[in-house]
Length: 81
Image 1 (cartoon, rainbow, N blue to C red):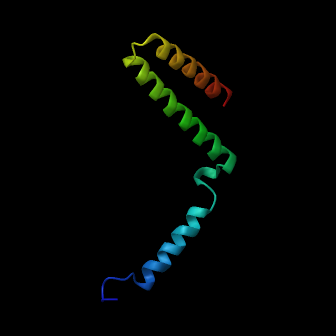
Image 2: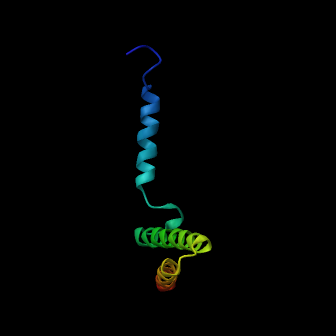
Image 3: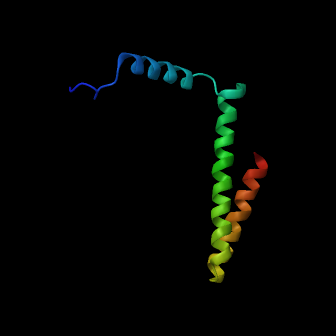
């Protein structure tokens, strides 16, 4: 390998240390369960935003009805979290 193209030993050591820190406990003392719940909440919020965006542009009645039902279900899931 040509000089300057590879990573130095110091860089590799720093990367390993960062990997170990990243695998540790989440910041703020949050547990894995909290992280899973936060990820689910974020996913539901993104889905809700997408549905509301589609509702703003959809004029076809059956499609609007299906989107409104999906929105109600997502809101219910968010309330349960």
